[in-house]
Length: 376
Image 1 (cartoon, rainbow, N blue to C red):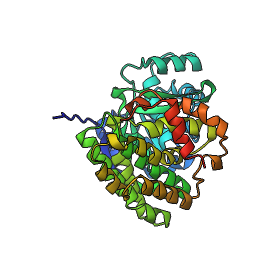
Image 2: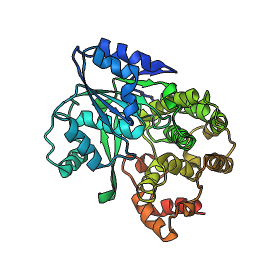
Image 3: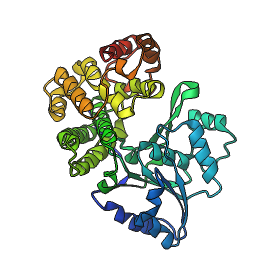
């Protein structure tokens, strides 16, 4: 009998208007006159009462906007240079996955002398972070990444043709505050792409080699929550946003223990080189990857039931319908990828820690076959 282990230390707070609890979390758990960096996707975040209250409480606050998607090594180094003298004790990252990736990465960098971008690359590659000098709190403004409850961050390095990962078991957030009221500014396309990212996180967690009993149950709950409310989201029903917030957090808790697999591994070059939004790229890969994994998936019927389909063919049709209604192209050719590029993209699709976590072994030939299935 397989013994199952699950661990996640993040204090989770979820629900509409839960941002009001941020003040109490900080007051009870961090020192007076704490140095706090608020890293946010927009200047508007700094005007929220919950943020202004931190300064009123006597904390030293530095505000920094980070509005780029898919943060690069260069952008992370710039954020580090702009905040290292302040040397925050707490980072509050308010935004989507990109903001949280930068926020949690910064916690691993403070207290270290990083002379240039190559020095940062070496630090990430060697994973010589030690115990982070700062703690962080994640406040998502999208519903899909689950980054607020994981201990790793994706940092892109297109000039070197690689995706890098900043990860440390000591760098889980102190808390995650998922206030669904913050999701109301999301454009529909972003909401749909993000929701599908959460579905991919959960499905991949369910079949991952490192899956466990708790992560599988969390994954199924996440999928049922998101897919069961997807039509309401597409119809513009704002009450569906709280369900997306719940589903995203559940998916994050699931894959925080398992990491992702082939869908994410293969998707990275599609995002980095072809500009396909991350959630769209991974969702396009869900059905073809599910097909190659099918015989290796434990209790696959439970997974298909949670997805609201009976087989891979129905899953493919359902995902493409959601993407079409969300305004996304559903083939690689429609994303202006040339067929002769598929081999190179397949070779880049082997990501350590993701491809080798897939229940079925992958190689460039198998990945190219998967890409050809979604080409046209």
